[in-house]
Amino acid sequence: MSPLTALPAHSRAHLNATDLRLARGGRPVLTGVDLTVSAGDRLGVVGENGRGKTTLLQVLAGTLVPDSGSVRRAGTLGVADQEMPVGDDRTVGGLIDVELAQVRAVLREFESATLALADERPGADQAYADALAAAESIDAWDADRRVDISLAALGAVDDRTRPLAGLSVGQRYRIRLACLLGAGYDLLLLDEPTNHLDAAGLDHLTVRLREHAGGVVLVSHDRALLTDVVTSVLDLDPTSDGRPRTYGGGYAGYREGRQAERERWETEYRDQQSEQQRLAQNLSAAQNRLSTGWRPEKGTGKHTRATRAPALVRAVHRRQEELQAHVVDVPKPPLRFQLPRLEAPPGATLLRADEVMVSGRLESPGSVHLRAGDRLVVTGPNGSGKSTLLAVLAGTLAPDSGAVQRKRGARVGLLAQESPPPSRRRAFEVYEEVVGRLVSSGELDPADRFGLSQLGLLPASAAQRPVTELSIGQQRRLDVAVLLAARPQVVLLDEPTNHLSMALVEELTQALAVTGAAVVLATHDRQLLRDTAGWPRLRL
Image 1 (cartoon, rainbow, N blue to C red):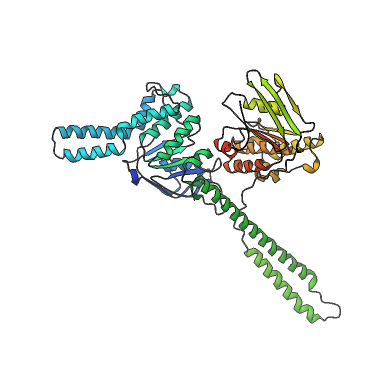
Image 2: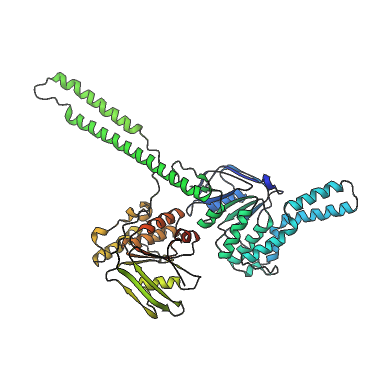
């Protein structure tokens, strides 16, 4: 239930968090989080899975107490969690009544004040004026209509007698979201609100959030929504000093600021490593002089040996002290993705599909003609056959009709929507087995081998773990690594943004835009579609 935390604050709505810290199982989840959201502010909260985004919303909502730090709120608060447990006896109408409880209370107060005014009770004039102002300030009489509009726009059930328990998770979520958008809360806390929305629902959500007069805290991986809505971004991913960063200027300001922050971090780390190496070399040189340089040339007396040796010892001690005093206090920066060179013979047709169809899966004939450097985006509604077409192009599925031709020796790689069943072997072993098989079969020249660590997709600690122990996002990164291990000349990507961090998606998108390979992608990701707006489209 969305908590009713206070009377409406309107332009005085405010949410402030100071130095929030919280650990679970001894592992820090939130570390020094500061934020301020006032009326008109729309704060996006980003970070890879496990960085504490949902935990932060729970702390801001007051349902979870931090280990330290404080939260102050002014105004009414509406919360949309990712999951919404329901009782067997609750109905759609009951949920709407709960979310509009503040509106109902204001209207009841107005009705009481109206009766008191009619009865000419003492003080009724002022009570009526106050009740009228309160009702007008939240447009209380129009709240149910606003909810109905959002229910329709989000494709949600609007029959108020329907039991919630009989509805899908997506339907329940859309009903809750419609209530929040219509209730007029001062502050909205939304956790991945795009998860169950279609294109029309996304458009409606975007408009309503931009029009919202109060404050919004939005946790989302939807880069298009963040681009269209937020005024600032709180990044919970690691930083050089361990504290989260807040960037102004909307999502574009966040991208620019994060890039500058990363470059500063890498420069500071590189400088400290260089200084550490210089001091170590100085110590090594002093130690070498101590072992050999104290011996004077033949003919020199004992006095010379006696004075030179102590000076060399003092030099070694001084170098040791300098090295020990130099503290590398900048942590190692996160990995950067490095796409290997993917080259293909210019001009030659690498892959061609003519009028291919698969019964029950790809009913409309699809044709594709790919040369080196070609780009193609495959679009269409769910069930139109996008994944099927990519599987036909990759050769993992034979078409029922039509023809597919591949240039002899052309390497074609497919990133499927979902990862294969996880292996119990360690991640680097899975990768090396693929590379070894490609080399032994002659499909990959040994000179073209690209180490897993060189890709910047998995840190060494993750590469050494069994795949079954990796997170979904890390398994997806391994999928990308295995795809690139073959140095494909045709890259087929089916929903490539699934389970990947926003930072990696942007690095991958930029790299694919300039690679020499042919690239085909199928996606519903709105920002990826925007980023590839200049690519040719094939609509199924």
